[in-house]
Image (cartoon, rainbow, N blue to C red):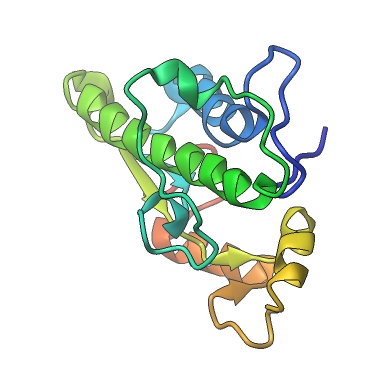
Length: 176
């Protein structure tokens, strides 16, 4: 299944907003399943984005703010015509904000469990990775990677990820 920031709201087979399902819920589910296999001083790294920070992202139309009713993070109505891209970036920013919040909460809970207290959870912003899910939005805003130092090829972001984690990345939980 593919998803796009500019094609209007999309849903998973469970009727959850697809960006939140992919960017936050699926990752957190995987972390919980693998937690018992992470090395004693392992690292869990969530990929975030400046889009979680109101006012920082260049394409922001609607600032990401956690709603009073948390159900609104995963349940959406159809986008108003003409607002698809702005609402898409809002949903994306909210999914990244939820990931940062999960990072803080998971760290807090791990500290309370002696067997897991040496595991650290990080959230990092790899920069703008060129992805086809943004292609139409980028084209519409007359923006491309040659003009923006914030945009990176995948390998550049991979190098940053390895730098954040330290030696031994690539093994399950082996950043330590």
